[in-house]
Length: 204
Image (cartoon, rainbow, N blue to C red; front, top):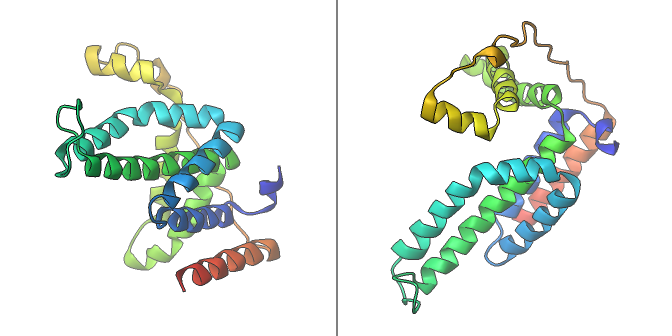
C-alpha cells in the first residue's frame, strides 16, 4: 500500500490538517466535502464506515431532534414543530459529523492498531514537559482499541441488559504490547511541509 511509505505520525498529522480544513468550510461547502469523504470511505473502507456509522446513529438522531425541533424559526407544515432554520442547522451539523465518521474510517483503514498508537504517542511526546506520561496514555489507548475489537454491538446490548455472563473474551488480553519507534524520513518532512503550507495559504 502506498501509504505505508510514510510514518504513521505523518499520516495522522496530515489527516488532522485536512479534517480541520474541511470542518472549517462554510455551509453548503461542508456538505460537499462530507459527500466526497463518504463516497471515498464507502469505496475504500466500507467495513469501518458501516461499523462507526451504526454506532453513531443515535447521535445523529439526537442532533436532528435538537436542532430541527428546538430551534426557533419558520415552522414547516405537517412536521409537528420543526422549523426551516432548524432543519438547515441540523443538516449542517450532521454533515460535519458524517465527515468526521468518514475521515476516521479512512484513517483506520490506512493504519493498523499498532501504527495508530505509535503515531498518537509520537504526537503526544511534546506534552511530556507537562508531566504527561505518554507511554501510559499509549498503553491505555492500545487496550481500549483491543477491547473495542473484541466486543461487538450485540454483546454490548447483552451486557447492558443482562450483565456479563461469559468473561472468556477478557481472559486472553494481551500480556505484552509493542509500540514501534518512529523515525521520520525526507518523504515525511516533504508531505508535512506541503500540508502545512496548504493550510497556511487556506487560512491566509
